[in-house]
Length: 104
Image 1 (cartoon, one colour):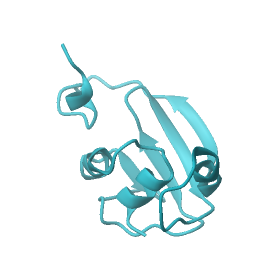
Image 2 (cartoon, rainbow, N blue to C red; image 1 turned 60 degrees about the vertical axis):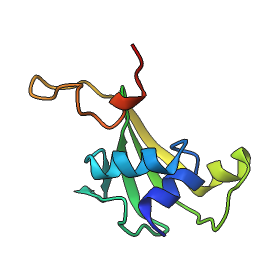
Image 3 (cartoon, one colour; image 1 turned 120 degrees about the vertical axis):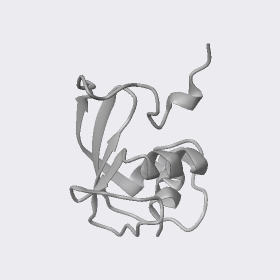
Image 4 (cartoon, rainbow, N blue to C red; image 1 turned 30 degrees about the vertical axis):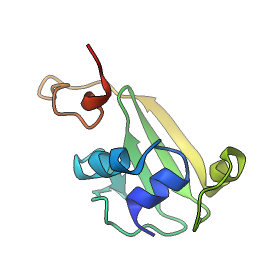
């Protein structure tokens, strides 16, 4: 299954274009390697998602072919860890995958 599809079907990300921009922007790792939206994921893979203010590590434990209820979607992964994401001095907020969601 494609990474962007998994993120959408598991409800970790609200929309597939957002999942695609996150992955292509370098905010998603599969097994420690930076992934693209078209990267294939399978059961047992460990993903690291860098969200706006936290980093989430999950393990894929299920697969879906269609939209699922919120309860069923949460059964597709298990959370391994969560940590605060503190941008370093070289990392600016502009150009981050979620910046386009901010409204002034």
